[in-house]
Image 1 (cartoon, rainbow, N blue to C red):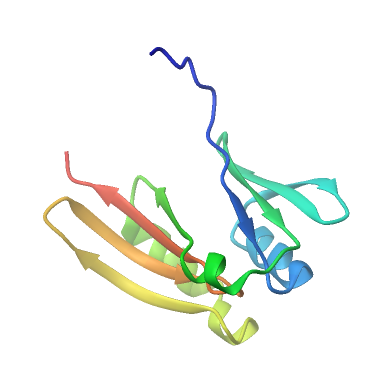
Image 2: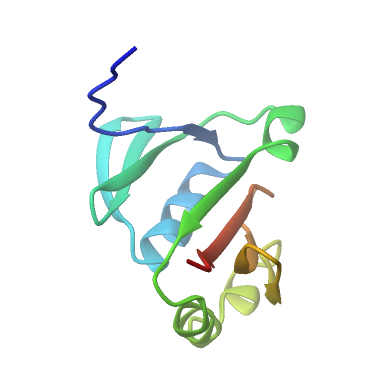
Length: 121
């Protein structure tokens, strides 16, 4: 089957929609408001929908992988944002090296786990 896909846009939830919107804008995503309870966040042509919806089991099992060119640079820029001071539930985990590449982790204000990494080629 040939998809000819243009994008994949996952839907994620937010425990506090306004707080999560601020968080993702601070991470550098551009927001497009879809409705009063949903926004589309994008960067470099990739994006996701953030919903004003919170289901604990769904949030606790949501993970997103963001591939970047240079995870070290991304990590340093992430630290400079001082997110763990501004958002009490945000957690950052330093870069780890694996056989496939390197990655760091971000837990957003709702608890969604973001893997941010680069692959070895």
